[in-house]
Picture 1 (tube, rainbow, N blue to C red):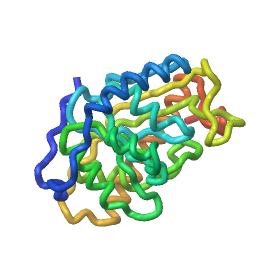
Picture 2: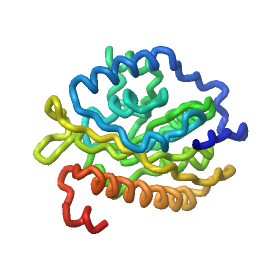
Picture 3: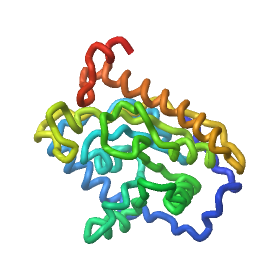
Picture 4: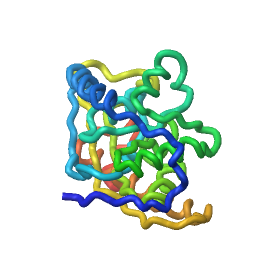
Length: 242
């Protein structure tokens, strides 16, 4: 069993950052998981890699519109997620806020979102962040640095998550898979990065981010080989050779 990580008190100040409410989210997870499983054939693998307690960063690839709700609903932990700020408008935005989800701007360094993410981890909860920053091929060819930064600040382990089947060849990024489709959620072995004290130099964050990117890339390639389910536009030859 993976030992929970203890968060250091020497973090960016988060005393004034409101805690994310988990009660409504726990109820949503039960309902959401049931709805997802009634509509799609979902297979979870590697769930033993998700610590049963303590802070953890979940790092899924991002290919389809259902990726965020899927991870939050089926992960065996109450999971708060960083989601693009454009979603936080109207009734949908109010619902996401009530569920403790965190809006993040994608076109600049959103320090408020980062502080809220640190608060989630400081409270010993699970935080999901899509390192690629947007829906794309899902192969982790490039990532943003936020996932590495959060690990460096808190010492929380990063668990890679390979999402396969949420979008297949021929589907647009806004389409959802047909009912009954097989979806895979594959959790990899935790990635550990040593906690780094302030100041965390930009080149050091970039170095750690590249290390994380390689681990995430390796996991999603391995998941494709294990499941036989390929990412959109993935080359079977390259996957087999990886």
